[in-house]
Length: 213
Image 1 (cartoon, rainbow, N blue to C red):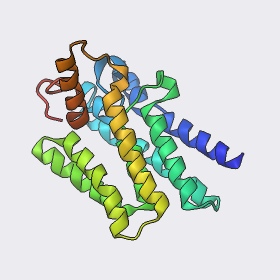
Image 2 (cartoon, rainbow, N blue to C red):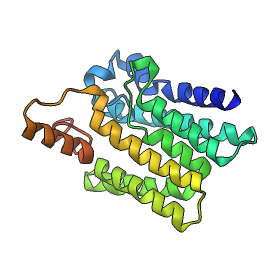
Image 3 (cartoon, rainbow, N blue to C red):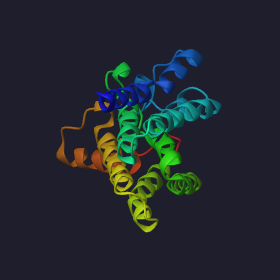
Image 4 (cartoon, rainbow, N blue to C red):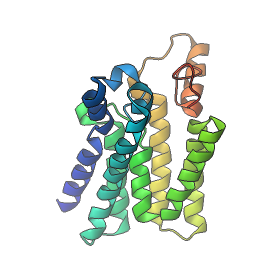
């Protein structure tokens, strides 16, 4: 029962819709209608650029706290990883937003800070390079893909290795699912949209039209 309680608490903590709350308080904006994801990037483009900082800090903390609590309670790294992933899943499919949400990178960073700080640094470097090149979604996916190998090279635990694989899988599923946005009926267009979702995390070539990431 304690394990179930920790997993449920982790999911509910991750489900707190930080970006949606900030968007509504600051501008009366519903990110589900104005942005591809209910996340810090949605706040950045649809509300105010500075707001991504407090929203991002809280979202990172959600993953970090959910991961730390099992360790503090004396549980092993396996449960800590499971709780971290539960927070990410809550962030991506929030019960408060009709099971819509963000992409999970911020709470996953929080999980990595607790369990694998070098992995958090690796992901941040990948995101920074992607930002400079105007290809943040591509860099994020490549950074996530590199994390399981980094765990193996540094002698990380099997639980952490499975956790990084799990986060890559969650990210791919979320990108393709895209908060249940409908796909085109034409097969060629549908494949093109799925390809853009996989690599660029968007249906159109750019979102917003003038933005690269």
